[in-house]
Image: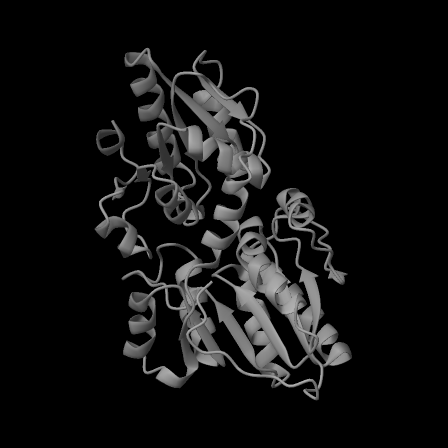
Length: 337
């Protein structure tokens, strides 16, 4: 990470309590370097709260980065809506913040977890730090509901850690004071390069052909958009005998059921359960290209020199598109193939 501004603390600096709230695998990956750096400071006490928003993937990712939650917020249902999840998290986080009385709350990105964390911190008058601040698209509904979350979080954030100067300018255009903005760099690159340097082993079932690494899980793509994209991908593989697809299928049933219906049974399309982060990095390193609707892979794959086709019409990462390594193609059959 870059540190253009740094506070200087003496040995007499009082201990400060920082609460990190995470709910999904990308959040863990992106806050892990920040937690690691703060753990080195004698004046910092770190608390980690997990929301369980992505419970099927969260525990293994926490273990990969040697993180143990101080509080885990359970869910009764895996089929919660964003509204139900947000209301639950605000109540539970409000109670926890009242008990712990942290000096600062930190959350990453644009999930319901980050959104609820910012609200709960605001109600308790606790400074909130937003990691990966300032990403924007032209439409409040794309991605949904993440773009709404990003814009809402910005209103009450005390320190906006923007990954790029363009993200910082987005905040300035929204009348956020420059004094509250820090261009910190993208923390996912810290985690990515550390794992990549360790030369992770390729998953044993990864195809030995020119392989497309495929991921798809965006809420706005559920239904017809995913069906169209998957149908086009299968047709492309049918006509290209030296190409295979490796698809770690997201646990969300809206994505999983469509993937199984359209892509299963093909000899060169491999559907697998979600991967650990080391396996993800190895798969990127060995892929021919990446096809995804993920935000994180738009950052990770180019950093490892792999081209990305994005199954979306807009992106909050225009720098990736401008670099020429990432291309927006949408989800229509004609655009995908």
